[in-house]
Image (tube, rainbow, N blue to C red; front, side, top):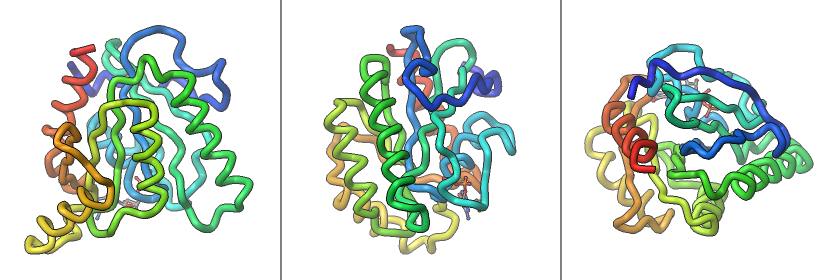
Length: 197
Ligand code: GDP
């Protein structure tokens, strides 16, 4: 699978604009500013592909990308940005919920981006509960690994596993979008998810 052959198709704000073919979807979720766009850019090997923004919480759409004509890469709005209004936060979570509900059957794996430096937030924990509810396989990508000292890596990964209550079937990938650390591992995981389904 050639990730460089990923194309932006459209932004969707309503169920009627979600993909309408049965090919597999891999879905990216994460707190805003965690580096979700940077992670997608690293995967497709193009800088400035998914929008990298210095203004967190601006994406209010579900962004749909077609990967090498084999499946969909779905970029859900970033959640949990504290400075957005309550109404706006509700709008985001409604859209995330609407997408996950509408497309449940075709989602083959959810990729949740967290910050390797920090304890996952209450919003992250809620997101994992949603993933469990929808029954999708889960890969957690611990991004910004380059910001950790070597001695901090293992304890931080253990804390992420514990707080998110990850089990053996869940994949946890220490990652740096900036340095490209473990990008091959992430790409192999996505490819497997798309090609096995
Ligand atoms: P999004 O809101 O989740 O899409 O996050 P962005 O991709 O826009 O990234 C948010 C900020 O984090 C930007 O300033 C990025 O340059 C920075 N960032 C993203 N990934 C990494 C990483 O792996 N390491 C470091 N040091 N910074 C990163």
